[in-house]
Length: 224
Image (cartoon, rainbow, N blue to C red; front, side):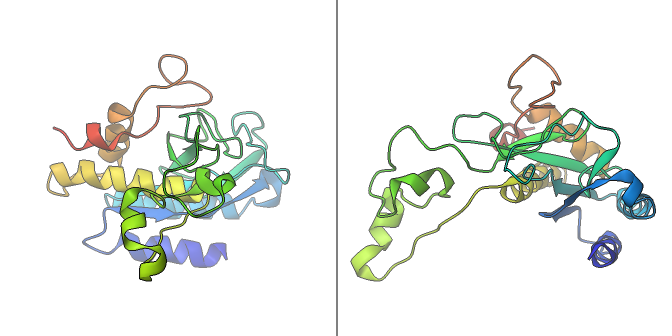
């Protein structure tokens, strides 16, 4: 429930060694149906921000038909918690560095994107025993590494799916890389700026409707 979500944010905000809070969850509401909820979530996320934490949330996986929603389009609707307070929403990109077809997007509704799966790779991943139709959602599943450990030897595979729920923790991890460069001393606003400054600018130059501030780049984030 959103009551649990708010309690969780407030709890994590007061933990001394927590710098980043990730939430791979959310819901899309008409604002007139959540008049009390929106300010409550805003207040919780802003409290976390006042404690120096960055709150990262998945931007959502589109409408009931699986088509991404332009979160800038209708100001009478809101996606929570990704559009609340000082937190940031994360959209998903696919294998081709496009906004994934299912991913919500928008300048105000998202801050940066991160890989979340979706489109198929141009050819089946080498050595993979899974159906090629599933390869677009694999997370390192079918490299030679996994073949070496797997199959008849009784080893294991890592299998994934697709969604902004996968993109959000990736962005949170990149924020942690940035924070680590400064000994964990950055606040939420500084981490937010760091993500934007180290992201790859995709699409139109600058902040745009589909890619917002760009797709996170862990290599850039790992350098001073």
